[in-house]
Amino acid sequence: AELGKRSMLGEAVTDSRIQFDSAENIHLMLFLLQDIQNPRSKYKPYYDILPRDLSHLPLFWSDDELKWLEGSPIIPAIES
Image 1 (cartoon, rainbow, N blue to C red):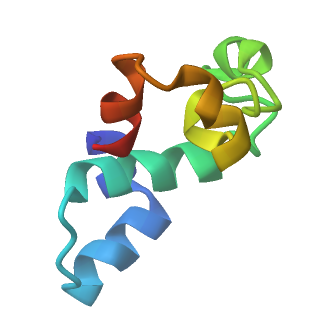
Image 2: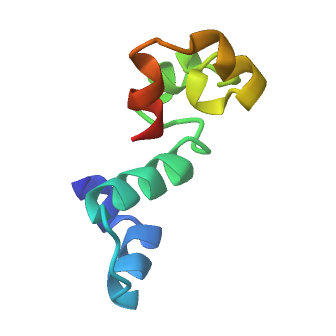
Image 3: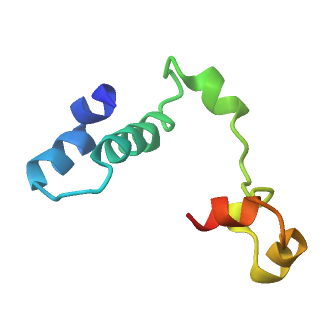
């Protein structure tokens, strides 16, 4: 999160004084979005193994697909 705060985008968010529920996560996400574009990033090996498609995660499933999980404890976890 500290890297995110020190990034150009992180500083812009901090300077804007916008209140976020999870400011630490915002800074981290902004850092990742900026850094993933850098081919010389020290995190490039990690970025290279991240999935390009998240459709396998129930969080992104349609209502029809989620019906297959009815009665499962994962539904309340997804909704929270």
